[in-house]
Picture 1 (tube, helix red, strand yellow):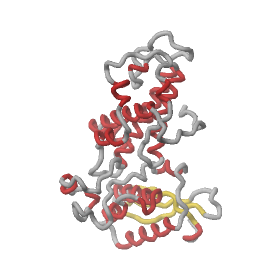
Picture 2 (picture 1 turned 60 degrees about the vertical axis):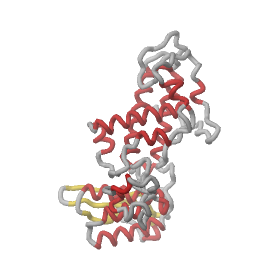
Picture 3 (picture 1 turned 90 degrees about the horizontal axis):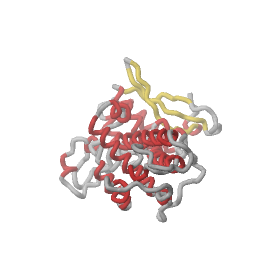
Picture 4 (picture 1 turned 90 degrees about the vertical axis):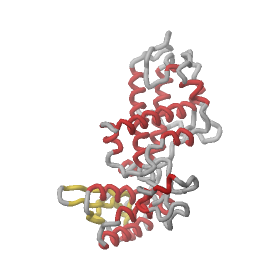
Length: 326
């Protein structure tokens, strides 16, 4: 078990389920040995598995974002509403310990435990929203949220939405790498034919081009893993994000096996799956859509689409040492 409160950092929370009970554990590491092994420390036993999952998701949001965690207090109150006072007290104690812990670095592999922990289910103010009232249960059943255009409770990318977009980007990244491996490494003499999810306009490019395009999807996925909204740095990333949003929307509407795999255990939000709004808010403009995704776009010759990978001037370029997923 961990050393005293002041001697250990808490950097993540994980649930444990068995047939009779569900428990919440903290991952801790001694401050004097920051490179040592992490240890599990029991925090609380709760009434059901879904509540343990929701509690860990909320606590991980606080670990990553601290007092900047949107809607955290309201979210936590909703999760703990039916739990005994002993559980509430244990959670308050562990929050005090998180405050005394070192912040979790954005590049920490620990984020892989709950890569969507920084995404809130609502942005409800702790004292209630002036427009729609007390924001009970993170606006889960709040009809007023739909009536007030100036309500500040909504969030653009709750955990389930983030998870589906991340999954779509990862899937397309792997599929495009597969397509790249199927063609020769030289300059192609003719279009390759159908290479979906590579847009038709780019079906006459080199293996190197497709590998760089695959990395655009990976860069979008890494943004989300870091708890950030994806911010395209190049036109290739804009196209990748557009395609990932469309694939995520398909998974959400079908509610099939992929949906259950990638979003089934995530905390729900009344603001889930607003993909049209994300199409409006995540892009500086949509010039790429008409030029390269419209059905009438003609196939470009090898090298004519290298502009896809030019960095936008408004953002710092990504590290040139980040390599490739595979």
